[in-house]
Length: 183
Image 1 (cartoon, rainbow, N blue to C red):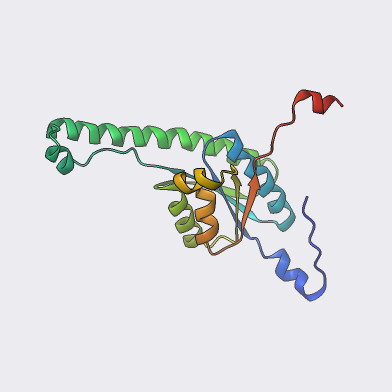
Image 2 (cartoon, rainbow, N blue to C red; image 1 turned 135 degrees about the vertical axis):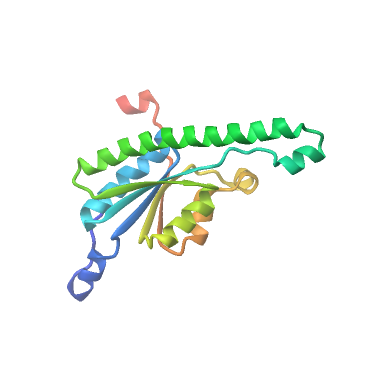
């Protein structure tokens, strides 16, 4: 648990410093670990947790492009309708996932809410954090580095650089093998 080392006249500003904490989740067990860290902070500062899941829209070829490359316009419209249906299915799944996460934090006495956003993760998280005026973003980072990160990009990197609020990045913990645990 984090303990503030602040007393006197600054104590009040520290206690109100993290009123709204944003926790972006991607549906993985790994990203869900951020919720544990954020919950500890929320308990200490009586903060509200806002859980967000960004769902990238299903990618399709626009009908004008499809026609130019020789794809039947009817097939293109069917693909677009299928993509819209898939997006709705994804949102229903995500809603169930987030409702379960919200129940977990409210059982701990933490106020919270969840939101689903369609878009590209890094950009959507930054935009949402600005719109909702969050005070802190807590998220996991996979620890990709070097060439992998340069090629694939990093949501955590983009959020850290563009959010304009503190971002607490928790690294992936390396698993100890069983031999190390028993010694």
